[in-house]
Length: 92
Image 1: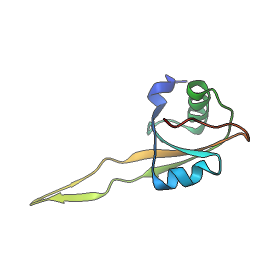
Image 2 (image 1 turned 180 degrees about the vertical axis):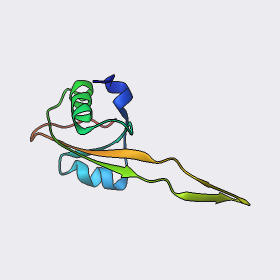
Image 3 (image 1 turned 120 degrees about the vertical axis):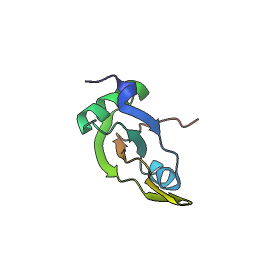
Image 4 (image 1 turned 90 degrees about the vertical axis):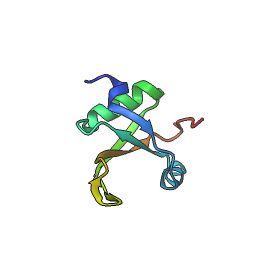
């Protein structure tokens, strides 16, 4: 397993993320090369909680244009982590 802090980049605090928080699910931005097992172990080690499920998705970069130059934002990976009943992650 990789270093847990290199697998989990940060907790995403978005509208969708706060709605999922009521269902005991949390959104994370993760390393593109990380798999579900790495993500599960990293969340359990960092936050000291029991993870029951991990769903991942690759988010493709969007096309952007600044004046005459066209470009693209970076693609990234998102993970939805479901915790065991009674567990929670404190969002500061």
